[in-house]
Image (cartoon, rainbow, N blue to C red):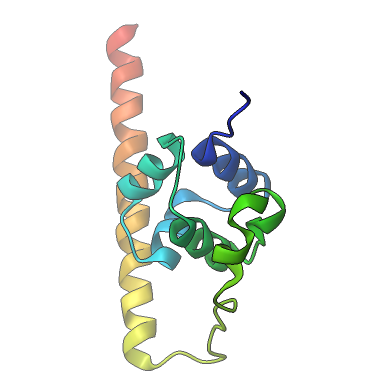
Amino acid sequence: MNTKHHGQLIEKIVRSNGHSITDIARLTHVNRRSVYNWFNQAKLKPRTIRSIGDAIRYDFSGVFPEYMEEINTRSMVVLPATLSKAENNRNDRNDWKDKYIELLERHANLLKKLGES
């Protein structure tokens, strides 16, 4: 029996379309750890697949035809043309926080490499 690993398939599509984990986390309103956990799960709920698809504007019904009805029961999320000032501030704050986390991870990796040599 050839079963699909949902998380791996979705991760491949997400990365091949140039999306970052940070973007997916922000657009699906979860933390980055949750996104990594999704990618490690062999089976995801249709609502999670739809949420990721909505975030990256990708139709997963071709990849997961067994979930086609469940994935397409709701229409794609329509993003507002303009965001309120509070939403813009929140997005800016999240962007800076994500950049800071990424910088910390890079710094930790550099320290690890220096410790190995």
